[in-house]
Length: 251
Image 1: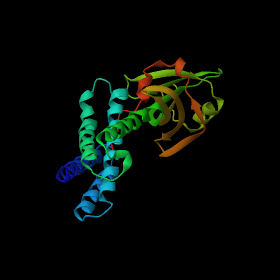
Image 2 (image 1 turned 120 degrees about the vertical axis):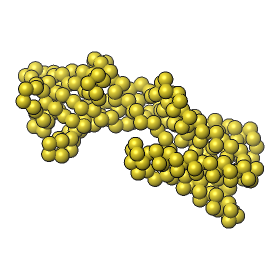
Image 3 (image 1 turned 90 degrees about the vertical axis):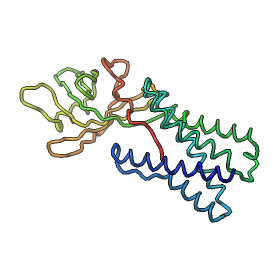
Image 4 (image 1 turned 90 degrees about the horizontal axis):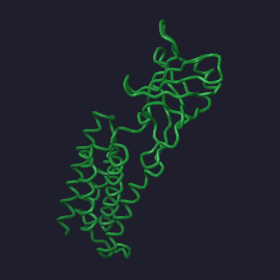
């Protein structure tokens, strides 16, 4: 079992470094916390440090939680792309193996049945995190303002992926007039790189608020004085463009 523990840990370190390399070209430099923690456990184990098994246990636990979260992302946000679930299944299986091959004198995990219960708990924590998941979406917005109490706003990810909604916030209206871009020959006020604070519950958007945008002509970030809530029941179009699309992977 001792050899298996080290073999599985080495595979987890290799996996973590691979994910770090992939992230470097997608989301940028990312500190591989779990990978480093697992490497520390290996070094301490080789040195026969008395706390090494505890570090192995913590490493296995965190890998199980993080991989369960990755699996949950595919279930709730990436339906139909189940091939990407491998990014969660591989470290999950390695983490399960590491959990069961780590021998430590703790009463709550001193039997296989208790380790199974512990593993199920970690799965529930990882997937259960989607019960309330705040994220920030970035879209482009066009505000069509007039003298009425309400006005239309177009949110766009691409020309084909858009939605419209009617808003009534005077504060937002005045700040858009003062800060947004206008182009000759096109109606409306343009707010590129608009940040929308989104909250989802198991993949369903339950709240969305417009919080800021970037004036690309002068490279100025404009944060609205008061976040404006998007009335989800009045949205016309593809609201799902506000859902996260980058796979949640820890390493």
